[in-house]
Length: 100
Image (cartoon, rainbow, N blue to C red):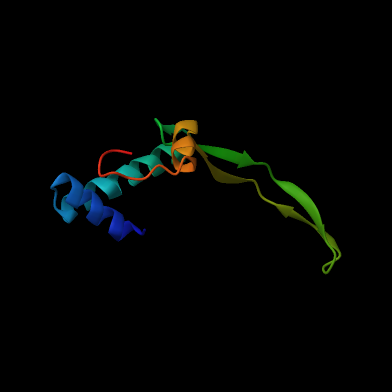
C-alpha cells in the first residue's frame, strides 16, 4: 500500500475528503520530522517509537587509496515497533471490518 492508497482508505473509512486527510497525513509526518530534528523522541502508543541515534565519526583505511579516511559523524533514525503492534501483525488476525 502506498501513500495515495492509504490516504484514500482513511478518507473512505472516516467520511472525509481525500484532501482533508492528505493535509492531516502530511502534517503528522512533518511534525514527527521536526521533533526528531530538534532532538526529541516521538512515541506513538501501540505503534512505534522514533528517536535519533548518533553514529560517531570514525577513521578507516581505504586500500585502493592507501590512506586513512575520516567518516564524519552522522545521525540515523531509529524506529522501534511496539510489542502490541508486533504481536497483532504476527497473530495474522483476519480483518473483520472493525478495528483490528
